[in-house]
Length: 339
Image (cartoon, one colour):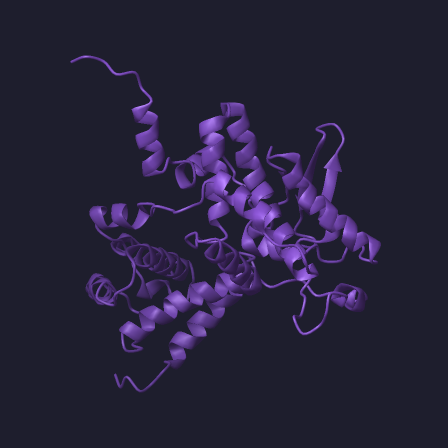
């Protein structure tokens, strides 16, 4: 088939019906079903936009060979093959398409055992030590409102370890106090925040020193005094071209800070402090690893739930492994024995 043709009409009809299925009974949001369609588009592209049906084992093998030569990660390829397997399985249940797909050949949409292990092997995640983060926070300048906001932003991430979209969308009203626990927390709610899987949770402050907690609380109090309400952003967007009174000028309709701006702030603060630049997400690793080394199993479980994980196994597998230096330090503290 001529590769200049960027679509094949019969394929488009099939994909349209599948998209309606994902949006309807499956209840996928746009971001999720769009990713599914991208994977199917990849299959079409590497097959020169040939007809999706009928499907044969030879076609599957040829496709896997092609996609493995595209320089893509094995984790991406594994997800791509799983998506295609689900798509063609759906076709086996459609009266007008089931003759073109043999259900028994769908398992061929898979990598080898070794490739699957490589795809699922977690990459080592660099993260800061909590002591280094606290030192940087205490040294940050607070002469302007932008600097005060940035310090409060990094401090809250150190206290709660939120995902970046959660941090960007947190409102003043999400900061709450639990009288029974005598601790502050962020009420992470899909009603007004951008949350992974729309899961509600309570992200309590980690037990750092009071001067660290006070940074966030004083910032929130400042916003309240100048007219911000529960629906206002805890970290508003501030334009450098205005002066220190910018918040006063914008408090009628403040904008939320963007994830891109947050990344820029973290990068500048830690590079200026002479430290390596890690992802904002790495603070979650810092918290989990600290909890694993310094707390009880019950404490680790509480941290796991605060991070929004469905089980402590998720926290331990993804975040809780020791850094190589910590392994070395732990082993070096063992009493020496004569051999």
